[in-house]
Amino acid sequence: MRQRPGKQNNEHDIDNVIETGGSQESVRYNRELKKARNKMILTITLVVAGILVVAAGVLFVMFELRDFRGYKVLTTTPTDYDSSAKYVQFADNLLRFNNEGASYINATGQTVWTAGSDMVLPIAETCQDYAVVADKGGNLIDIYNIDGLVNSQNMPYEICDVDVSKTGAYVAVLQNGNSNLISMYSSLGDQIYEIKTSIENSGYPMDIAISDDGQKLFTSYLYLVDLSAKINLTAYNFGDVGQNENADRMVGGYTFEDQMISKVDFVTNDIIAAFGSEEIVIYSMKEKPSEKAHIKYDDKIRSVFTMEGYVGTIQDGDITDTQSTSTDADSEEESLYLMKVYDYNGNKKFEYRFNFEYDNIIASNGEIIIIGGKTCHILTSRGKLKFAYTFGDTIKDMVPAAQKNTYVVTYEDRIDNIKLTKSEKKDEKN
Image (tube, rainbow, N blue to C red; front, side):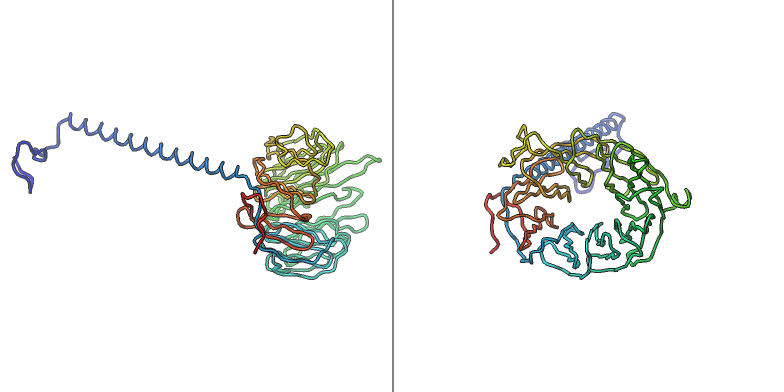
């Protein structure tokens, strides 16, 4: 018998064993022992993972259901009152524009830059870090990014509509007598393509939308035939697929004879929402368009909006009493207005009732902000009321800021950067 180094020859010492390959019984026993040990480790791992998932879910629900009752003013910036000024979300902050130019306002309410211009009826569209401001009925178009003015360009004909992509490429609908031009330009003003249409054959442009990558275009035109109105929706692809399709790059079209479709929007790079007077039609367009869903209205629609993953409508509710002070309209059986939110497959996700006159709906960063007068409601993407408050002054605009639960609130005389709190009272900045 060979004795292991460092051990004494003791018959009761379990380490003093004969070192052979082991019997079949011991091998089988060791194999079963190893399998049992691995099974135990796997079970423990799954239990721990399950606990972590449940804990994460609980934390998420707790956070989403968190009841914010007040706010703290982080910064405030005085502004000159201008009733003509409008605000749109730009990058993570705000673009302020009027007939004299545009300004970029950051999350603290500070003006980063201002660019002068001269327009009669300015309209604006934004996509990520780019914005286009155009003089509707005029000729001037200005392109901006977060650093300021990129390019200013005079169009050869009257501007009807514009849109911009995330690359800064922009498209303009121009009208010249009885003909229309759909022209796309790079951010620096180089023409990329041009489509010529006539009012006689194609109709009057209602709306236009460009995909994020600038490769696809969707238009809505009103066409009159013997005093009867029709809507023509047309899809264009300026990539390889459209180039191989035909000379004008048209890859699909739809005609509606029983309703108006005044707004079209690329809600993602490959999905379009067409908002009609009777329904919302969702199209999928990776290369060519195809119908994805129809969302029929059950009442007259007052407003429509889009947010990431969803489209929404607002219609009249069941009451006409505008003096109601209820702030949690979810618990009301009747309401002044009814909001309905759907996913891109046409499935209704939630309804929300509220009882105050609203001026604007801002849907961004997974939230829906309803503002009207001095009142504001903020909903999560699941339809939970996150914040309901009546401010001391009339709200002109309100958008989410970069940090969680912070917002840029625009009043007539100032811009406040606020943070929601659980306290009911407003905490003024020192």
